[in-house]
Length: 158
Image 1 (cartoon, rainbow, N blue to C red):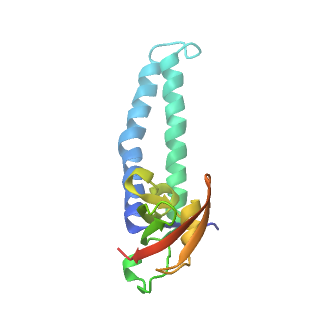
Image 2: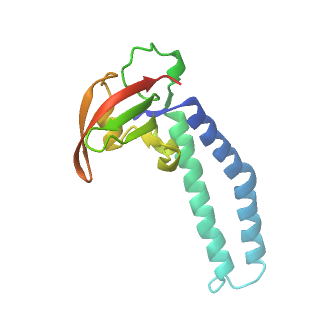
């Protein structure tokens, strides 16, 4: 079975989304389908078809979340040994050796990734390139723009 690594915050966010889908969205969609049925002929009833499409999306997302939560592997980085090694859940600061530009990222699960919030997926090229490396290491990472060399400035277990 495939395991889905996630932070405690990521698990909590998925649980909240699941709760919202089941208690708010699902009943609203069921009500919309019932109202659309009252309008008569279902073949040409756009409201009915739209509501059924929403229902399919909602039920699919519920199944997706339940599957991920069932196969989740919650990793609380604050309980790990703080040895300067890059593992899932750490916050890293890296410096591009060409431009001297520094970036800080938290390595999270796919569902938690949010580039604008500096949270990158464990499956992203940068995270894959950093995993297993240690503070102070120089790391070459192949990105869509080509190979970039970084120095791993810091690893924080937050």
